[in-house]
Length: 127
Image 1 (cartoon, one colour):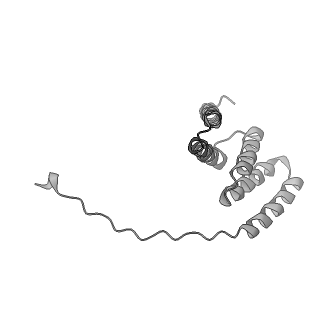
Image 2 (tube, rainbow, N blue to C red):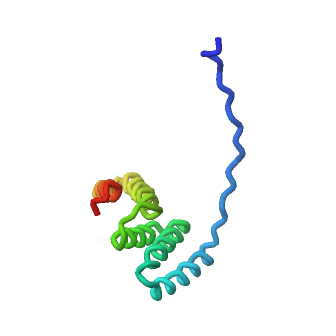
């Protein structure tokens, strides 16, 4: 009977680890910060998001959160900042949970809830 056949396991190749050159990324962050200082209001958001992405890439989560939150406070629109912030809040909440820091767990849960509300408001056009 075809209903009870065993599924064949898919053979997956091992994932290649991406080599991150931290020094190069930090240099790029400094360059983008210089561009941010000279940017007009239209381009400021893209620079803030770029810096947030670079900090996320080198796993400096607190700095990434800071730049993404600034980006969203300047211009709340759906995009990379929203998705990466969701990911970052979950990472920070998980870290706090592993350290049994209930206060930080609640802090990042509240941040996630605020972000979800902002996401819904943005989609509905209430902003």
